[in-house]
Length: 225
Image (cartoon, rainbow, N blue to C red; front, side, top):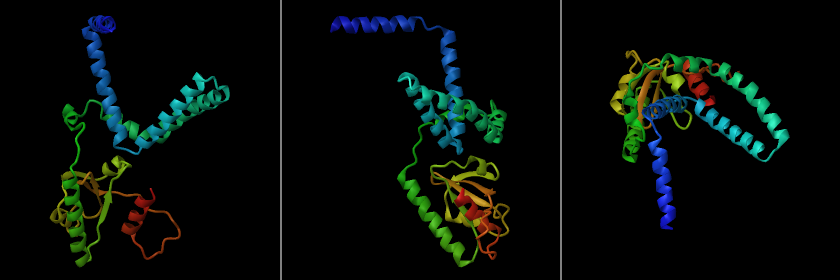
């Protein structure tokens, strides 16, 4: 047993001693690139799409391991056509990501692994409820979107980033009819007011009654999406 452990450590030390400065730089650069790819996918709807692609890669690998020739043929052709399709569908988001390469500082690394406390979430819910009650009394319309598993990065880009603690007074101030940001949607992310004045997709459902205005159609369209 001791001989096995000794050999293991000797092998590990041999591999570590072969690592050069260039290898360390190579690993560091790859880590940065993977982090920004993860960040890009995390903040957009592409996250679920990436999960689907990962499953397809797993199935393709399994078909090659077990020599399933029919499955290999299907998945290889799907990948050839599918990758081109993905580039076309996500062309605006890919262009946005390439434009931002090198444009952001490394301050984003400190946010890795942050967890929002339940206390903050409960407080945010209370503040939103209080604001909704006050807005209802004054018959003030308000569009509030709560981001959940599907990220809304493309909608956030159409508005103004606020990134503030959720407050009843702040919500009421945003939707005050003379405020610059009142004519748009407010998006809440992880218990915080992330952005305001955001544009939402209008519903094109012909069965919606004609009495509903643009704001109602925007709320329905966002829910449909």
